[in-house]
Image 1 (spheres, rainbow, N blue to C red):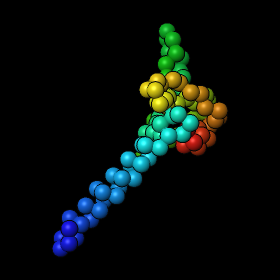
Image 2 (image 1 turned 120 degrees about the vertical axis):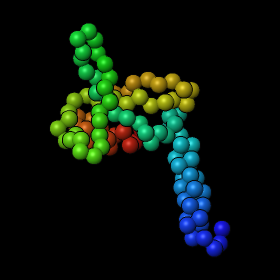
Image 3 (image 1 turned 90 degrees about the horizontal axis):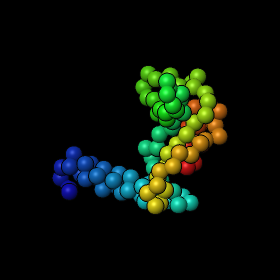
Image 4 (image 1 turned 45 degrees about the vertical axis):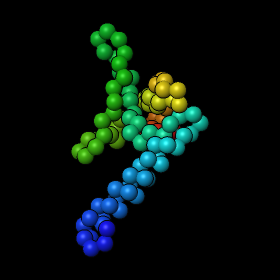
Amino acid sequence: MGSNPTLSAIFFFLVYANGYVMLRFERRFGGVMAQSGLSIYQRNRTDRDWRYQRVEEGRGVKTGRIVGRFYVRPTQADGAQNWKPLTAESFEQAKVEHDRI
């Protein structure tokens, strides 16, 4: 790639960063495929029944006071997606537990 530093940097990023991302997705833990985008949900009562609602997080979203039962829905090696309850009582604990899945 030699003379153009911008192209060299782009090439380096595409090759090495993409390789790192692919390695993260190929790892498996106890039959569950590693997922970096696994969301955390809460089960809330609606007028008629219960619904799982994703806990929003990001810039400007306050999550410090969210408590309750939390759930994740990991994809198993066979493609099944079952709801898995977390033991965490706060959202911060749920994020730590979610990272171990």
